[in-house]
Length: 348
Image (cartoon, rainbow, N blue to C red; front, side):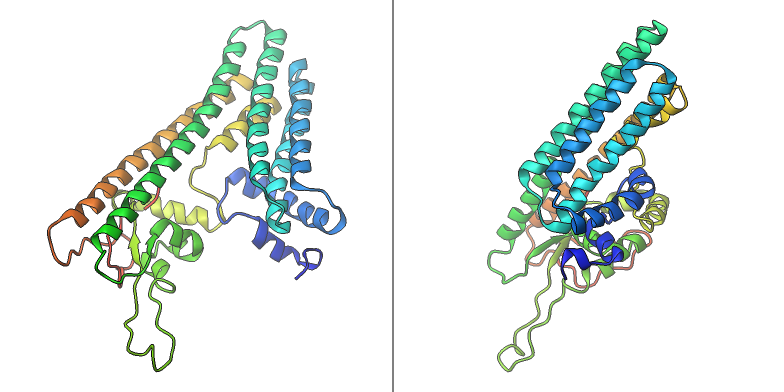
């Protein structure tokens, strides 16, 4: 179906993430998605052009923050939110029209970081000029540091997860060289592809449809045994330790809200929108920074538990047994897995 004839519901399905920051879900998507549909139907604007527009609006916001007075703080907060709406629209337009590019993703990331730095130092300088308090200059540095820390931590966690996956795939291939086995799947990917199973924390449902394919109905294939994909879940220990968190997470996912409630997005919105609007830049920034650090520490702890599951998964394949069955017990609140032939231990 051509893009210009797509109904809004279909545009939402294509452009909106299955899970996103609560600020985006509640305050951005209801505006950004209809605008993206309109742009795709009526204009030839590209995602990179929207990225430039978001960046320039961010610089305008920084200029307002630099003036210091509360009226300009309100104007800066309003323009910063518009900048963020555009920042979300470029990715949506790319997904809707298929115009996404590697360079566009790089440009978006770099402009986001420059926008945060410009607004942070402009906000700090404006409030220093207004009050004469030097702690606003320090605050600007702290905001930039925390924003960078968030994305560096995210990148390193992604690299660690990728390394664990790579080692597991290599070990499983080595352990099954003589066997005709199906491919390997990670529980995180299966849950991402099946949001209803993720919400219900039904691990068995997540792995059932594609993980147990049957041979085609033909005379040649009827004798061939069905293969079963090995499913690896590296969050088994976390699920076992925090069953209440899983219920809370499921409640949020029903509304597409990810459980990382104070990420880089919410931190930016607190510092550059909420604080200026209520004329309480310093206290709001400090509270938001503390919450950001708390959530980042929680993610690091979750990664620690995941690395333990990773070690147990590798150890299961190192045991000198002819038919190892390293599948752990199902997590609380989840149905027991059927047909899994590999360790079920997944993602950070």
